Image (cartoon, rainbow, N blue to C red; front, side, top):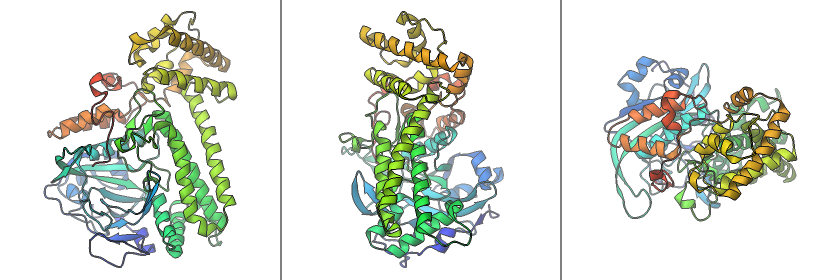
Length: 531
């Protein structure tokens, strides 16, 4: 590991906090603070992502060595590493929260790699920083498992995301009130080493803008462009308003594409605060997220959001645009007028709708989107799926099996094929069966218009409709075993989720509907931000 190369462009090019002692405070005119991770008493490697580790430059011998968990929990720094915490602010549930920052994350440094370029290694749950406020900076095992597994699940689904290199126990325990109901208890601590080309967030630019720190704001934007959007730069031309606008436009496009992917697979982020929005358009900060079991556009996994449902499944695009509006406000001093920023915001809505329609066409097995008649099919299907409890993931996989010449004169034939996706099959009423039969008739006419065989259509549909997702109850089962010292389910889920679109006959049980016992179980239906 001593051969790994770190160049740490971020801390070399941007202003640091002048105070080096680690205590909570307001940090001004600085992009970061130098800070060391808290020492861990008994670091133990639970899981690692082998291929990704190799791409980063870690050998198999490195991973198996005793030094690896020491580095991955912050006990040891490799040559070239300089640890620090980022300074940023953000809107939380629509309200400006002021300074936030890396309250429990410590960046180890920017690693230069042959195949992946610059990648920042960051330890989540590594102890107090100047941004911890009243918290202890630790992360518990349950939330760390969820972050580790979901980061890699999203990657293999083809969704932009931060990556997870390792998951380690630290040896410490902390008291947590899991559901904020007064039932606090001791929980084991863990640390995830997560990786991204950049951990800058929308809030990284909001905070200096809110304080009138225009010089720092400009440096941050220019650093972001130079390091992660270099294709926007023109040789021999200084930074211009047009380059800043192109940068914002690309962030908008990436954010839109990410959310379309979330909708495709049934992922609900749960806490889309502006400090949880990556400037790269990556899914970041896996907290109270969840996966849609029964299709419900109004579902949120976050207990804190249970009443307002601000971050509900069907509202994610709207919130994405709202967050981009806050970023636009932050960079306004660099642009000087509102119209070009407003135009990009309008483009977001248009781009999202176009991309969503194309995505839905692919989910239903169409060659392409054909206009209003297709949109009617999408919207009427969503209404049907919402009317009764229908497993979203299973429905789309089964839909691919329908023969093009299916007899729709009676519901018995299609129900024999699609029945397993319904949670209460025996409760389906005659009116619903008739409505679904009518929809299927229109759907089959549309399929036959494209002229694809059922085999061709199924192959295409099964490349965008996953068979396996990180269902909430599967993650919870892995957590409960891990809290007893059994990490086997983590490793099994790692393996299964590497091939989410394949049938994997030996793992069919992991593609089943949510069991009844998980309907209202903590960790399976709702989650808090406590971690």
